[in-house]
Image (tube, rainbow, N blue to C red; front, side, top):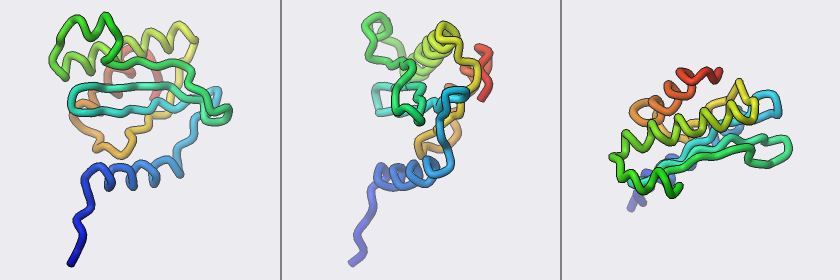
Length: 120
């Protein structure tokens, strides 16, 4: 009998394959995305030091109080991450889609980051 592999397990396998090729440096840190059914989490990581430089997520108090739909949450969180990157003088990023397909909300995050002046 063949065991069915879950969708999330397949995503994690894809993520490992992507991470072999993508590295965040101090000049060009990695922008990682994680999404669940209700929330989205974005962080900018320097892989050489192993530290998170900045982050934004939909669980932050002022965003959570707005009670937005998921697409609006994605826009809000992406705009917040872009402004925090500008504050920390980060202009270039490597986009890590974390095994998700590059469409829908993942593509929206990348587009919003580009519109706010970040180079992906």
